Length: 327
Image 1 (cartoon, helix red, strand yellow):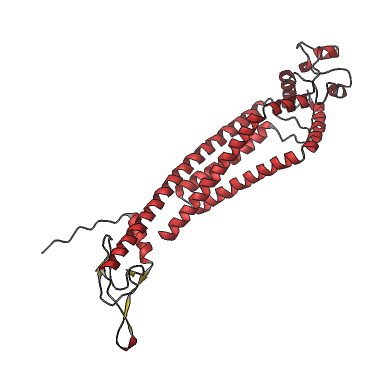
Image 2 (cartoon, rainbow, N blue to C red):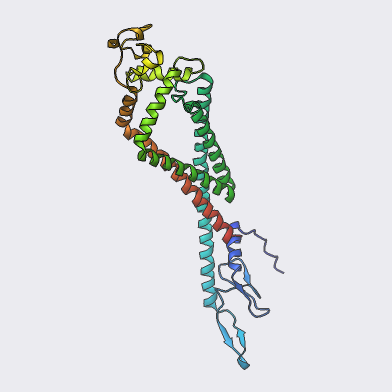
């Protein structure tokens, strides 16, 4: 008596596709049994694929009787089965590739957020040079902006990492929506900036002039350092003119950082020893000269975000397909 063949567990992908094919089954005559060539399962009563059996014959009295599957029909079924198996295997491999690419992408995203957050905290603790230049928005400082930006980037990167490694549809969709909102907000800000450039220029100059009155006062070391560095590095003085400082000091005087050659109380000397260029226009010209670098930075930022959106939506669709065909 022949010993029974040892049971070999089927591959998960084969089981997945087998289940998919068995969803298309139609009944055959009671007790009939057949094996699909190249497939791991038998076609018994109620288990022949609708793709394999379509032929029927008419018996006496006009009643329809199911006909046994032919060799050609079973051969076509085997080909169809192998095609479904190959398709399921390719989908699985594609999903795994996207999964790890998205995980690495979001891991780098998360690490970048950690770095931004760390720099922001360091600036906040040490009262960094460019804390703020605005009197209307004292909280709109470099430190606070970096802290908020770093926190958001860390959260988004974390959600993306977990969603990718767990193949969780909810987290993947949440990551996509959050990143899409940020991208649209950035795009809106850029469009509004170009549309209202003149109004923004006037408002910025007016607000910066108000901020000059906080120069050198207690609790505004960041603003003081910011103006000192800008005037020294860009060789300029005041917002639109060095006379802007006269209103601050109520006398003919400028900060020592406006001097051509720095020395103690040099701002009390004659205007011939001060920088004459306005800082607002000087910085604006510098930005225009470096517009290419600014544009490349903005383009790279947009490309990274678009890449993240593409990864998230592609993986989400692959997970949905896997759930649909391999459930």
